[in-house]
Image (cartoon, rainbow over all chains, first blue to last red):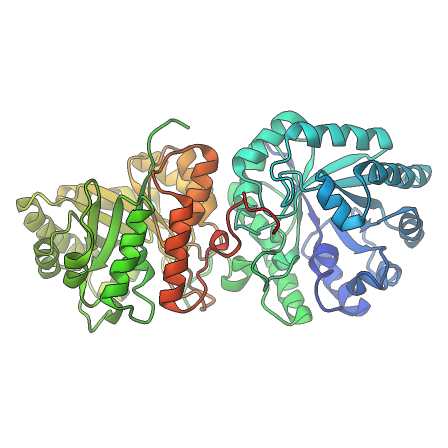
Length: 296
Length: 296
């Protein structure tokens, strides 16, 4: 592996918390600041969605107004539409994320739109964002398969990616929404798309870390991770959280791949988020401590 | 990767169950037969240890007397000493496993012997076994590090391995007893020892599968796995089970690496062992089903 810095985009304050009982704005800001203290330099802080639809994400503008704005940190917000994009940019975010699914059935279920309609909406968001020079990253869900259609071919994903780039997105992140990726599927997709993309992995089948490792070997240097591995529901058998930030940092540190994120710092943020959500987080590194831990 | 068959040694009936509330001989035999039905051809069925020390392993000879002895299946038993080896061979096992630690402190804590004493004992066992043409596999615990000494160097492990081969063992299995291995540490050890060894991985830090993947890439073709990922205590924060058989088969199937073990068959055995131990097993593949599962 070469010496490129790995870009960890921390999505815990958004993807990690969105399915939890609402955490106050003040505590979400504490979490974000703890992650910044850990060296995180790219963070999805909130989403500008309807508080009725996602109560845990209410107060996004308040979060943005209260966080420490440190030099060199990119604040990202998820936006569902042009209205959300405007609100996000008013709040001062540096990057927008939009989601669209490579699975037509999943897209319909998730946002009640066809792929064409979603691409058109992404285009509207990119127009607004482009006028303000704010980059848009498209997170393509079900990029490795869907619970509805089964396999989604790399060509299907690549052709959607081309449409999204045409619509104005600046970068692409491929999401394994339901945990069906494998090292082989990761490589197959990267063979078609190239490695200059981000990966957003879920641990539904315990494969998030091995898929990240295969992606690192194939040259990927951008990952979405969630502190503690939050995301999905840790207590439902068929849902699971994101790749845990501490699990990826634990691996990267051992590989000598610099991410700028301190494992001890992430573990402190993970302890905080455990307290805020009121239940254990999925990460085993968080539960037992790093490999360097000695018998007491 | 080349086309060599992967040898999965199923250790669930021994390593998986030894820390659980005792399961009856009859039900342990049911589990073993379910695993054989799944295509398992190498299985650690029991251990000939003191039933006082490990109540869950009582009745080892009865287990061996009752299991289906199918052609092409290697039955293994763990033995702690010459007496256990004699009993195991009388019961008709095809292979013995012995454990010894690469960590002097762990060895002392675990079996109250120095490494020298343990090597001498392995020699006694090998003499008995050699006379009966029964091969002995040495499982070297803490081969990637120890909670007492920290890192254990590959050279230390290799020099212990040489002593064990001199003492008469036919094969070596390196165990990540406390989940401190990483892909890099796996490769570092294999660089010194070569890949013609077995790996016995634990998932204490969620790294068992990524370590197995790194080992596969480096040419390892023998793994100890436990149905459901049992082993250690799934409810204690600082202990965790073995690499789950279904997790490895799930990966191997996708990689096109033949193991002869059917994923559906292992999942059936995993459902059985879940019933027998009375709590969920650690494997997420067991919990949510294989990646090919569709939305209901």
